[in-house]
Amino acid sequence: MTLSSSMNAGVSGLNVNASKLATISDNIANSKTFGYKRVDADFTAMTLTGRAGGYIAGGVRVASFRNISTQGSLITTANAMDIAIGGRGFLPVTPSSSLADTSAALPLRLATTGSFRPDSEGVLTSNSGLVLMGWPADPDGTFPPFPRDSAAGLVPVNIAHNQFAANPTTEIKLGINLPATATQAGSTGDPFDLSVEYFDNLGTTQTMTATFTPQVPVAGQSNLWTMEIVDHATGAAPVAQFTVQFDATTATGGSLLSVVPTAGGPGGAYDPTTGNLNVNFARGPVDINIGTLGSNNRMTQLSSSFAPINLSKNGAPTGNVIGVEIDKNGIVSAQYDTGFSKEIFRVPLIDVPNANALEALPNQTYAVTRASGDMFLWDAGSGPTGETIGYAREESTTDIAGELTALIQTQRAYSSNAKIIQTVDEMLQETTNIKR
Image (cartoon, rainbow, N blue to C red; front, side):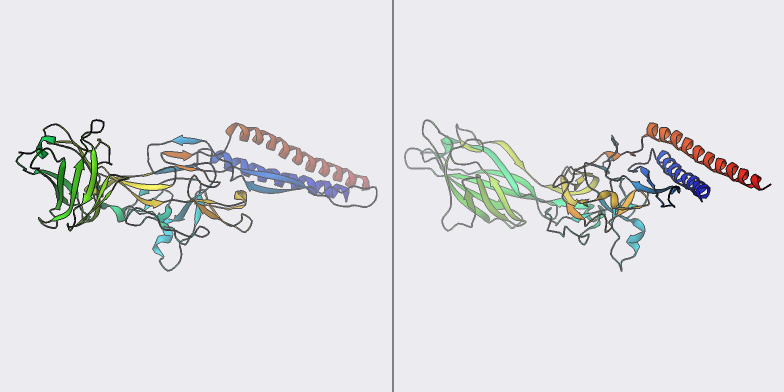
Protein backbone atom coordinates (compact mmCIF):
# COMPACT_ATOMS: atom_id res chain seq x y z
CA MET A 1 0.00 0.00 0.00
CA THR A 2 2.84 2.37 0.89
CA LEU A 3 4.68 1.66 -2.38
CA SER A 4 1.47 2.18 -4.33
CA SER A 5 0.84 5.50 -2.60
CA SER A 6 4.39 6.53 -3.43
CA MET A 7 3.73 5.68 -7.07
CA ASN A 8 0.48 7.69 -7.02
CA ALA A 9 2.24 10.64 -5.37
CA GLY A 10 4.86 10.61 -8.12
CA VAL A 11 2.17 10.50 -10.79
CA SER A 12 0.34 13.43 -9.17
CA GLY A 13 3.66 15.28 -9.05
CA LEU A 14 4.05 14.75 -12.78
CA ASN A 15 0.52 16.01 -13.40
CA VAL A 16 0.81 19.19 -11.35
CA ASN A 17 4.20 20.08 -12.80
CA ALA A 18 2.78 19.50 -16.27
CA SER A 19 0.04 21.99 -15.35
CA LYS A 20 2.68 24.39 -14.03
CA LEU A 21 4.56 24.01 -17.31
CA ALA A 22 1.36 24.83 -19.20
CA THR A 23 0.93 28.10 -17.27
CA ILE A 24 4.56 29.02 -17.89
CA SER A 25 4.14 28.28 -21.59
CA ASP A 26 1.05 30.47 -21.77
CA ASN A 27 2.79 33.30 -19.92
CA ILE A 28 5.87 33.24 -22.15
CA ALA A 29 3.76 32.94 -25.32
CA ASN A 30 1.77 36.03 -24.26
CA SER A 31 4.69 38.10 -23.03
CA LYS A 32 3.97 40.63 -25.79
CA THR A 33 0.17 40.43 -25.65
CA PHE A 34 -1.31 43.77 -24.55
CA GLY A 35 -3.45 43.46 -21.45
CA TYR A 36 -2.46 39.84 -20.74
CA LYS A 37 -2.51 38.85 -17.05
CA ARG A 38 -0.08 36.08 -16.10
CA VAL A 39 -1.36 32.75 -14.82
CA ASP A 40 0.21 30.86 -11.94
CA ALA A 41 -0.28 27.38 -10.48
CA ASP A 42 -0.84 26.87 -6.76
CA PHE A 43 0.16 23.48 -5.34
CA THR A 44 -1.69 21.98 -2.36
CA ALA A 45 -0.60 18.88 -0.44
CA MET A 46 -3.08 16.02 -0.05
CA THR A 47 -3.03 14.10 3.24
CA LEU A 48 -4.32 10.54 3.64
CA THR A 49 -4.69 8.68 6.94
CA GLY A 50 -3.09 5.20 7.03
CA ARG A 51 -2.83 2.43 9.57
CA ALA A 52 -0.91 2.99 12.80
CA GLY A 53 2.82 3.14 12.25
CA GLY A 54 2.49 3.52 8.49
CA TYR A 55 2.44 6.50 6.18
CA ILE A 56 0.44 6.86 3.01
CA ALA A 57 1.63 9.46 0.48
CA GLY A 58 -1.27 11.69 -0.48
CA GLY A 59 0.44 13.45 -3.32
CA VAL A 60 -0.35 16.94 -4.53
CA ARG A 61 -3.10 18.78 -6.37
CA VAL A 62 -2.92 21.96 -8.42
CA ALA A 63 -5.16 24.98 -8.86
CA SER A 64 -4.38 27.62 -11.47
CA PHE A 65 -5.32 31.27 -11.04
CA ARG A 66 -4.96 34.46 -13.04
CA ASN A 67 -3.67 37.54 -11.24
CA ILE A 68 -6.03 40.04 -12.88
CA SER A 69 -5.56 42.82 -10.31
CA THR A 70 -1.87 43.25 -11.19
CA GLN A 71 -1.24 46.03 -13.72
CA GLY A 72 1.33 45.84 -16.47
CA SER A 73 3.59 48.64 -17.62
CA LEU A 74 2.07 51.36 -19.83
CA ILE A 75 3.58 52.35 -23.16
CA THR A 76 2.75 55.28 -25.41
CA THR A 77 1.33 54.84 -28.90
CA ALA A 78 0.33 57.02 -31.85
CA ASN A 79 -3.41 56.24 -31.80
CA ALA A 80 -5.59 58.58 -29.74
CA MET A 81 -8.05 55.80 -28.96
CA ASP A 82 -5.46 53.38 -27.66
CA ILE A 83 -6.71 53.34 -24.07
CA ALA A 84 -5.09 52.19 -20.85
CA ILE A 85 -6.16 52.69 -17.24
CA GLY A 86 -3.86 54.37 -14.76
CA GLY A 87 -4.95 52.31 -11.79
CA ARG A 88 -7.93 50.19 -10.90
CA GLY A 89 -10.93 49.54 -13.14
CA PHE A 90 -12.02 47.97 -16.42
CA LEU A 91 -13.25 49.32 -19.74
CA PRO A 92 -16.75 48.19 -20.82
CA VAL A 93 -16.59 46.36 -24.16
CA THR A 94 -18.74 43.93 -26.12
CA PRO A 95 -17.96 41.54 -29.01
CA SER A 96 -18.65 43.11 -32.40
CA SER A 97 -20.35 39.87 -33.47
CA SER A 98 -23.15 40.58 -30.98
CA LEU A 99 -24.16 43.89 -32.63
CA ALA A 100 -26.11 42.10 -35.35
CA ASP A 101 -28.54 40.60 -32.83
CA THR A 102 -30.86 43.46 -31.89
CA SER A 103 -33.29 41.20 -30.03
CA ALA A 104 -31.06 40.72 -26.99
CA ALA A 105 -29.01 42.91 -24.70
CA LEU A 106 -25.35 43.25 -25.64
CA PRO A 107 -23.10 40.99 -23.54
CA LEU A 108 -20.85 43.02 -21.26
CA ARG A 109 -17.15 42.23 -21.21
CA LEU A 110 -14.43 43.90 -19.14
CA ALA A 111 -11.00 44.86 -20.48
CA THR A 112 -8.04 46.70 -18.99
CA THR A 113 -6.78 48.11 -22.29
CA GLY A 114 -7.74 48.31 -25.93
CA SER A 115 -6.88 49.80 -29.31
CA PHE A 116 -10.00 51.19 -30.98
CA ARG A 117 -10.63 52.66 -34.42
CA PRO A 118 -13.86 53.46 -36.30
CA ASP A 119 -15.19 50.62 -38.44
CA SER A 120 -17.24 51.07 -41.61
CA GLU A 121 -20.24 52.15 -39.50
CA GLY A 122 -18.27 54.54 -37.30
CA VAL A 123 -18.27 52.18 -34.28
CA LEU A 124 -15.02 52.19 -32.29
CA THR A 125 -13.78 48.61 -32.65
CA SER A 126 -10.49 46.85 -31.92
CA ASN A 127 -8.68 44.49 -34.31
CA SER A 128 -9.74 41.58 -32.09
CA GLY A 129 -13.42 42.47 -32.55
CA LEU A 130 -14.13 44.28 -29.29
CA VAL A 131 -16.46 47.30 -29.35
CA LEU A 132 -15.96 50.12 -26.86
CA MET A 133 -19.10 50.94 -24.83
CA GLY A 134 -20.10 54.22 -23.23
CA TRP A 135 -22.89 56.59 -22.25
CA PRO A 136 -24.03 58.96 -25.04
CA ALA A 137 -24.17 62.70 -24.43
CA ASP A 138 -27.30 64.76 -24.99
CA PRO A 139 -27.30 67.16 -27.99
CA ASP A 140 -26.19 70.02 -25.72
CA GLY A 141 -23.10 68.05 -24.63
CA THR A 142 -24.34 67.17 -21.13
CA PHE A 143 -24.71 63.65 -19.76
CA PRO A 144 -28.03 62.56 -18.26
CA PRO A 145 -28.01 60.19 -15.26
CA PHE A 146 -27.47 56.52 -16.10
CA PRO A 147 -27.72 53.39 -13.90
CA ARG A 148 -24.44 52.70 -12.13
CA ASP A 149 -25.04 49.09 -11.10
CA SER A 150 -25.86 47.66 -14.52
CA ALA A 151 -24.95 47.97 -18.18
CA ALA A 152 -28.47 49.10 -19.15
CA GLY A 153 -27.38 52.55 -20.35
CA LEU A 154 -24.21 51.50 -22.21
CA VAL A 155 -24.21 51.61 -26.01
CA PRO A 156 -21.44 51.18 -28.60
CA VAL A 157 -19.38 54.34 -29.07
CA ASN A 158 -20.30 55.49 -32.57
CA ILE A 159 -18.75 58.64 -34.02
CA ALA A 160 -20.71 58.46 -37.28
CA HIS A 161 -23.77 59.78 -35.43
CA ASN A 162 -21.74 62.93 -34.80
CA GLN A 163 -19.99 63.10 -38.20
CA PHE A 164 -21.43 66.54 -38.87
CA ALA A 165 -22.11 69.04 -36.11
CA ALA A 166 -22.80 72.73 -35.71
CA ASN A 167 -21.50 74.75 -32.79
CA PRO A 168 -23.92 77.68 -32.38
CA THR A 169 -22.80 80.96 -30.91
CA THR A 170 -23.90 81.52 -27.33
CA GLU A 171 -21.54 84.32 -26.31
CA ILE A 172 -20.20 87.46 -27.99
CA LYS A 173 -17.62 89.71 -26.34
CA LEU A 174 -17.58 93.36 -27.37
CA GLY A 175 -14.40 95.26 -26.62
CA ILE A 176 -15.14 98.72 -28.03
CA ASN A 177 -14.43 102.36 -27.36
CA LEU A 178 -17.12 105.00 -27.92
CA PRO A 179 -16.01 108.58 -28.54
CA ALA A 180 -16.57 110.78 -25.48
CA THR A 181 -16.80 113.86 -27.72
CA ALA A 182 -19.94 112.49 -29.42
CA THR A 183 -22.03 113.19 -26.28
CA GLN A 184 -20.98 116.84 -25.98
CA ALA A 185 -23.34 119.70 -26.76
CA GLY A 186 -23.17 120.64 -30.40
CA SER A 187 -22.23 117.16 -31.64
CA THR A 188 -24.00 115.72 -34.68
CA GLY A 189 -25.61 112.84 -32.82
CA ASP A 190 -24.78 110.44 -35.66
CA PRO A 191 -24.98 106.75 -34.64
CA PHE A 192 -22.08 104.30 -34.80
CA ASP A 193 -22.67 100.77 -36.13
CA LEU A 194 -20.75 97.60 -35.39
CA SER A 195 -21.63 94.33 -37.15
CA VAL A 196 -20.53 90.93 -35.84
CA GLU A 197 -20.87 87.56 -37.55
CA TYR A 198 -22.26 84.64 -35.53
CA PHE A 199 -23.36 81.05 -36.14
CA ASP A 200 -26.87 79.73 -35.73
CA ASN A 201 -28.11 76.26 -34.75
CA LEU A 202 -27.78 75.00 -38.32
CA GLY A 203 -24.15 76.07 -38.60
CA THR A 204 -24.92 78.87 -41.06
CA THR A 205 -23.52 82.37 -40.75
CA GLN A 206 -25.75 85.16 -39.44
CA THR A 207 -25.08 88.80 -38.55
CA MET A 208 -25.92 90.95 -35.56
CA THR A 209 -25.47 94.73 -35.52
CA ALA A 210 -24.98 96.88 -32.45
CA THR A 211 -25.93 100.53 -33.04
CA PHE A 212 -24.69 103.17 -30.55
CA THR A 213 -26.54 106.49 -30.66
CA PRO A 214 -25.17 109.35 -28.51
CA GLN A 215 -27.62 111.50 -26.58
CA VAL A 216 -26.54 115.09 -27.23
CA PRO A 217 -27.46 117.61 -24.52
CA VAL A 218 -28.28 121.27 -24.98
CA ALA A 219 -25.27 122.14 -22.89
CA GLY A 220 -22.36 120.24 -21.35
CA GLN A 221 -21.80 116.53 -21.85
CA SER A 222 -24.28 113.69 -21.24
CA ASN A 223 -21.99 110.61 -21.40
CA LEU A 224 -25.20 108.80 -22.30
CA TRP A 225 -25.83 106.36 -25.17
CA THR A 226 -28.65 104.29 -26.59
CA MET A 227 -27.53 100.82 -27.63
CA GLU A 228 -29.71 98.79 -30.02
CA ILE A 229 -29.10 95.13 -30.94
CA VAL A 230 -30.42 93.94 -34.31
CA ASP A 231 -30.43 90.26 -35.26
CA HIS A 232 -30.63 90.25 -39.05
CA ALA A 233 -31.92 86.66 -38.98
CA THR A 234 -35.21 88.08 -37.70
CA GLY A 235 -35.28 91.32 -39.68
CA ALA A 236 -34.29 94.96 -39.22
CA ALA A 237 -36.20 95.58 -35.98
CA PRO A 238 -34.05 95.63 -32.83
CA VAL A 239 -34.32 92.63 -30.49
CA ALA A 240 -32.97 94.56 -27.48
CA GLN A 241 -32.35 98.18 -26.48
CA PHE A 242 -30.38 99.64 -23.56
CA THR A 243 -29.48 103.01 -22.12
CA VAL A 244 -25.75 103.06 -21.31
CA GLN A 245 -24.27 105.66 -18.95
CA PHE A 246 -20.52 106.21 -18.62
CA ASP A 247 -18.63 107.59 -15.62
CA ALA A 248 -16.95 110.99 -15.95
CA THR A 249 -15.24 111.23 -12.55
CA THR A 250 -11.50 111.66 -12.17
CA ALA A 251 -10.74 108.16 -10.81
CA THR A 252 -12.90 106.01 -13.09
CA GLY A 253 -13.65 108.24 -16.07
CA GLY A 254 -14.70 106.38 -19.20
CA SER A 255 -15.89 103.23 -17.43
CA LEU A 256 -19.44 101.87 -17.37
CA LEU A 257 -21.64 103.57 -14.77
CA SER A 258 -25.02 101.96 -15.53
CA VAL A 259 -26.72 99.79 -18.14
CA VAL A 260 -30.52 99.81 -18.12
CA PRO A 261 -33.00 98.25 -20.58
CA THR A 262 -34.94 101.00 -22.31
CA ALA A 263 -38.42 101.39 -20.87
CA GLY A 264 -40.95 99.97 -23.31
CA GLY A 265 -38.11 98.67 -25.48
CA PRO A 266 -38.02 95.36 -27.36
CA GLY A 267 -36.39 93.38 -24.52
CA GLY A 268 -33.08 92.25 -23.10
CA ALA A 269 -31.53 92.36 -19.63
CA TYR A 270 -28.17 93.31 -18.13
CA ASP A 271 -26.40 91.19 -15.51
CA PRO A 272 -24.05 93.44 -13.50
CA THR A 273 -22.21 90.47 -11.95
CA THR A 274 -21.09 89.05 -15.31
CA GLY A 275 -21.33 92.10 -17.54
CA ASN A 276 -23.56 90.22 -19.98
CA LEU A 277 -26.46 91.56 -21.98
CA ASN A 278 -28.96 88.71 -22.17
CA VAL A 279 -30.51 88.91 -25.64
CA ASN A 280 -32.79 86.52 -27.50
CA PHE A 281 -31.64 85.88 -31.06
CA ALA A 282 -33.41 83.73 -33.62
CA ARG A 283 -31.16 80.79 -32.63
CA GLY A 284 -31.90 81.27 -28.94
CA PRO A 285 -30.40 83.19 -25.99
CA VAL A 286 -27.03 84.85 -26.58
CA ASP A 287 -24.91 86.62 -23.97
CA ILE A 288 -23.22 89.81 -25.22
CA ASN A 289 -20.48 90.75 -22.79
CA ILE A 290 -19.81 94.51 -22.54
CA GLY A 291 -18.06 94.47 -19.14
CA THR A 292 -19.08 94.97 -15.52
CA LEU A 293 -19.90 98.33 -13.94
CA GLY A 294 -16.82 100.31 -13.03
CA SER A 295 -14.58 98.30 -15.35
CA ASN A 296 -12.91 99.40 -18.55
CA ASN A 297 -11.90 96.02 -19.94
CA ARG A 298 -14.74 95.83 -22.47
CA MET A 299 -16.80 98.89 -23.38
CA THR A 300 -15.34 102.32 -22.66
CA GLN A 301 -15.98 105.97 -23.55
CA LEU A 302 -12.70 107.76 -24.05
CA SER A 303 -11.14 110.23 -26.46
CA SER A 304 -12.75 111.10 -29.78
CA SER A 305 -12.55 107.86 -31.79
CA PHE A 306 -14.91 104.97 -32.33
CA ALA A 307 -12.71 101.90 -32.20
CA PRO A 308 -13.53 98.18 -31.96
CA ILE A 309 -10.64 96.95 -29.79
CA ASN A 310 -11.35 93.31 -29.06
CA LEU A 311 -14.20 91.36 -30.61
CA SER A 312 -14.62 87.62 -30.05
CA LYS A 313 -17.32 84.96 -30.06
CA ASN A 314 -17.70 81.25 -29.54
CA GLY A 315 -19.28 78.82 -31.99
CA ALA A 316 -18.27 77.53 -35.39
CA PRO A 317 -19.92 76.56 -38.68
CA THR A 318 -20.85 72.97 -39.50
CA GLY A 319 -17.77 70.76 -39.41
CA ASN A 320 -16.66 67.22 -40.22
CA VAL A 321 -15.12 64.89 -37.65
CA ILE A 322 -11.37 64.62 -38.15
CA GLY A 323 -10.56 62.70 -34.98
CA VAL A 324 -11.65 61.54 -31.56
CA GLU A 325 -9.83 61.60 -28.24
CA ILE A 326 -10.49 60.44 -24.69
CA ASP A 327 -9.50 62.45 -21.63
CA LYS A 328 -8.58 61.31 -18.13
CA ASN A 329 -12.24 61.36 -17.02
CA GLY A 330 -13.38 59.00 -19.79
CA ILE A 331 -14.93 61.75 -21.92
CA VAL A 332 -14.73 60.95 -25.63
CA SER A 333 -14.64 64.16 -27.69
CA ALA A 334 -14.93 64.57 -31.44
CA GLN A 335 -12.64 67.11 -33.10
CA TYR A 336 -14.02 68.92 -36.14
CA ASP A 337 -12.23 70.55 -39.06
CA THR A 338 -13.75 73.91 -38.12
CA GLY A 339 -11.64 74.01 -34.96
CA PHE A 340 -14.08 73.06 -32.21
CA SER A 341 -14.56 69.87 -30.22
CA LYS A 342 -17.71 68.27 -28.87
CA GLU A 343 -18.19 65.79 -26.02
CA ILE A 344 -20.08 62.81 -27.45
CA PHE A 345 -19.62 59.89 -25.02
CA ARG A 346 -18.49 59.10 -21.50
CA VAL A 347 -16.72 55.78 -21.00
CA PRO A 348 -17.18 54.65 -17.37
CA LEU A 349 -14.79 52.34 -15.55
CA ILE A 350 -16.16 49.16 -13.99
CA ASP A 351 -14.99 48.06 -10.56
CA VAL A 352 -15.69 44.83 -8.67
CA PRO A 353 -14.67 43.89 -5.11
CA ASN A 354 -12.64 40.82 -6.14
CA ALA A 355 -11.10 41.30 -9.58
CA ASN A 356 -9.13 38.03 -9.41
CA ALA A 357 -12.41 36.08 -9.32
CA LEU A 358 -13.56 37.40 -12.70
CA GLU A 359 -14.08 34.81 -15.41
CA ALA A 360 -11.31 34.98 -18.02
CA LEU A 361 -12.58 35.08 -21.62
CA PRO A 362 -10.84 35.36 -25.02
CA ASN A 363 -9.07 38.56 -26.12
CA GLN A 364 -8.03 39.55 -22.59
CA THR A 365 -11.60 40.18 -21.52
CA TYR A 366 -13.44 39.14 -18.38
CA ALA A 367 -16.98 38.61 -17.13
CA VAL A 368 -18.48 39.29 -13.72
CA THR A 369 -19.08 36.22 -11.53
CA ARG A 370 -20.72 35.63 -8.18
CA ALA A 371 -17.29 35.31 -6.57
CA SER A 372 -16.08 38.62 -8.04
CA GLY A 373 -18.93 40.54 -6.45
CA ASP A 374 -21.33 43.02 -8.00
CA MET A 375 -19.99 45.63 -10.39
CA PHE A 376 -20.30 49.41 -10.13
CA LEU A 377 -19.74 51.90 -12.93
CA TRP A 378 -17.61 54.88 -11.90
CA ASP A 379 -16.62 58.02 -13.75
CA ALA A 380 -12.96 57.54 -14.61
CA GLY A 381 -10.70 59.12 -12.00
CA SER A 382 -13.37 59.00 -9.29
CA GLY A 383 -13.93 56.58 -6.43
CA PRO A 384 -11.45 53.67 -6.43
CA THR A 385 -10.85 53.76 -10.18
CA GLY A 386 -7.91 55.24 -12.03
CA GLU A 387 -7.88 57.62 -14.97
CA THR A 388 -8.33 56.71 -18.61
CA ILE A 389 -5.17 57.35 -20.62
CA GLY A 390 -5.29 57.89 -24.37
CA TYR A 391 -2.35 57.16 -26.65
CA ALA A 392 -1.37 54.30 -24.31
CA ARG A 393 -1.58 50.51 -23.97
CA GLU A 394 -1.01 48.22 -21.01
CA GLU A 395 1.65 45.59 -21.57
CA SER A 396 1.57 41.96 -20.45
CA THR A 397 2.32 41.27 -16.78
CA THR A 398 4.61 38.38 -17.77
CA ASP A 399 8.17 38.62 -16.40
CA ILE A 400 10.30 36.62 -18.85
CA ALA A 401 13.21 36.21 -16.43
CA GLY A 402 10.92 34.95 -13.70
CA GLU A 403 9.16 32.55 -16.06
CA LEU A 404 12.44 31.07 -17.32
CA THR A 405 13.56 30.55 -13.73
CA ALA A 406 10.26 28.84 -12.95
CA LEU A 407 10.70 26.75 -16.10
CA ILE A 408 14.01 25.37 -14.84
CA GLN A 409 12.54 24.64 -11.43
CA THR A 410 9.51 22.92 -12.95
CA GLN A 411 11.70 20.81 -15.21
CA ARG A 412 13.75 19.66 -12.23
CA ALA A 413 10.62 18.93 -10.19
CA TYR A 414 9.14 16.94 -13.06
CA SER A 415 12.33 14.90 -13.43
CA SER A 416 12.40 14.24 -9.69
CA ASN A 417 8.83 12.96 -9.71
CA ALA A 418 9.66 10.76 -12.68
CA LYS A 419 12.58 9.41 -10.65
CA ILE A 420 10.17 8.53 -7.81
CA ILE A 421 8.10 6.44 -10.24
CA GLN A 422 11.24 4.78 -11.57
CA THR A 423 12.43 3.99 -8.04
CA VAL A 424 9.07 2.55 -6.98
CA ASP A 425 9.06 0.45 -10.13
CA GLU A 426 12.50 -0.95 -9.24
CA MET A 427 11.38 -1.69 -5.67
CA LEU A 428 8.29 -3.50 -6.92
CA GLN A 429 10.56 -5.47 -9.24
CA GLU A 430 12.69 -6.45 -6.24
CA THR A 431 9.55 -7.58 -4.42
CA THR A 432 8.63 -9.72 -7.40
CA ASN A 433 12.12 -11.23 -7.48
CA ILE A 434 11.79 -12.38 -3.84
CA LYS A 435 9.13 -14.88 -4.93
CA ARG A 436 11.51 -16.37 -7.45
